[in-house]
Image (cartoon, rainbow, N blue to C red; front, side):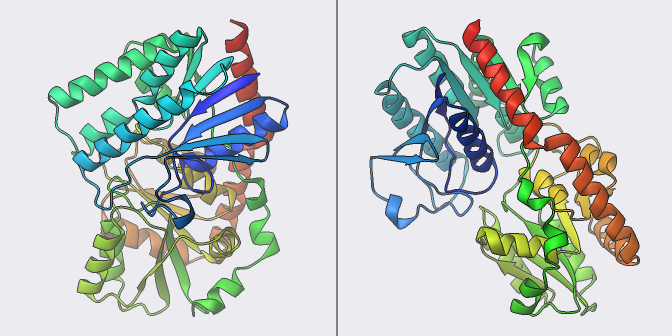
Length: 410
């Protein structure tokens, strides 16, 4: 099959949607399909474009059988509603022109966000007379409204119309979890055209704790003898990361506990400033780590944290959930009890779910889990087994390929 993928994120970005896209495209290419992706320069989660990609209107690369066509987009230094709209709009325009210049595909695979890629795929599909799959990784309008980033009005009404048109025009709609699928059904979309493309886990994480105990990471960062409590990944608005700082303040006298923030994102500067203002000696920030050191950090983590604002339910499913469970990290999830994250943690037996944005609950959970190394070891084993059963690539990627092939046949 000739497959054209439209997505704002791809390799060498390593987190979130970029990682999923890279795995999917390279798997399809390894199966003999001709895969082309129209994407932008790497920038996430630091929101900075590396020097080798900066200031170029277009670029072409080939990696592991996938043709990567990059086009310029505006990457803001300060994130707000206006700058994010300009960011996404610039990519929609440049990638659409870039896609028009490619060979006619047999199918288009558009990854949202940004939401507007659904309309771009619909327009290209009509021009070429080919179907498109709309892959929903984040229910963007719902998330913006529920998080208070946007209020209901003319702009959100327009976004919901764009969303509806993208759904109606798609031959198939794919999403990550059953909760997200149900949200789309509730919008009036035929359930028969909505399928699950579960995330694919990195198989190298399964045996991580058996290969290394994280001692090298602990020694490098002076963490010997510490209970390491970590948050890794994007530091954005919907993560509600202030709750970790509040928990750290409650435990500032416990010199045997170290809280780590690893990664980058729109809220990092603000979080660092708050930690400095509170004079928290038990909080440390580290940048996005290279893969080998990131794996060492996971092995060194005693308890991993997943946090979300309480209003977040089934509109997103953070990729860190898959990563942490695959790596066997015991988890404390400070999230909405009705969210997909909560369901995954509870079903897996990988840790505890506590009330979102409740620092007392987070701190009490840390105290509870830290009492028994045996309990943490059991949670680690259960986390890995759940990840293997739910997200193993030997099941999820062939399922995706089969669904794409059926769309082409139809």
